[in-house]
Amino acid sequence: INIILLGPPGAGKGTQARTLVEERGLVQLSTGDMLREARSSGTEMGRVVADVMDRGQLVTDEIVIGLIREKLDTVDAPGFIFDGFPRTLPQADALEELLSGMGRRIDAVIEMRVDDEALVDRISGRYTCGSCGEVYHDRTKPTAKEGSCDVCGSTDLRRRADDNAESLKTRLMEYYKKTSPLVGYYYAKKTLAPVDGMASMEEVGTQVAAIMDGLG
Ligand code: AP5
Ligand code: ZN
View (cartoon, rainbow, N blue to C red):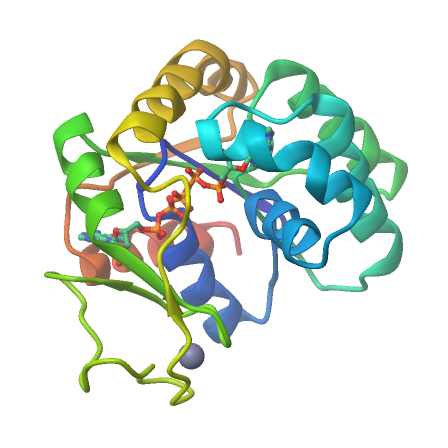
């Protein structure tokens, strides 16, 4: 089973992807995580994309398609969760082509619908564990003990450079201009499955689980 998590910045894609990885043994492919990894390991590509990401703009299709191609070529998995990819129509076409070359397809596109106001609140309160990747929020999901991760105990808790009001404005614009056309694209392919992303993390998880169970 291969699914796409589609939704604006802060919709909860990463949060739900982690649950699906734990409960269903799928492999998460997040282009945002791959790009941040390239940055922190100081690769040439990481240097090229750093400014673009911090401003909240989209990185070129060529770069992100290249990253996904490389993962699909090297990672063996029963199924993939595409998190934050595709984000443009050319990326969607490229993904379809890559998967069909492997005899695979997208089974469902889970569209997470969340109001802009809630997105601002989620993004401005978010922090993540630099060691295991667990996602927290100042108000809705703080760590049990201040300053250390509940899952792995690491004290390396981080806030993202692009999680500020200015970049978020650009990220939302980019989403509505370039990514939201994918809603119609997948609707036409009969793979779109909307969930109410305004609900609590647990409730969204229940909705996602129902969609996954329906895929058999
Ligand atoms: P990326 O890393 O993909 O960021 P994003 O799409 O902006 O998504 P986020 O990670 O911000 O949000 P999320 O939906 O995962 O929410 P989360 O679960 O963390 O991309 C970053 C940048 O990389 C882009 O701007 C671009 O430059 C580049 N890039 C990446 N992919 C690209 C591509 N394909 N093409 C071109 N460029 C690309 O949740 C957010 C917060 O809310 C957390 O604090 C969480 O605890 C909380 N929360 C989650 N669910 C709920 C809930 N139901 N109720 C209350 N709080 C909740
Ligand atoms: Zn951790």
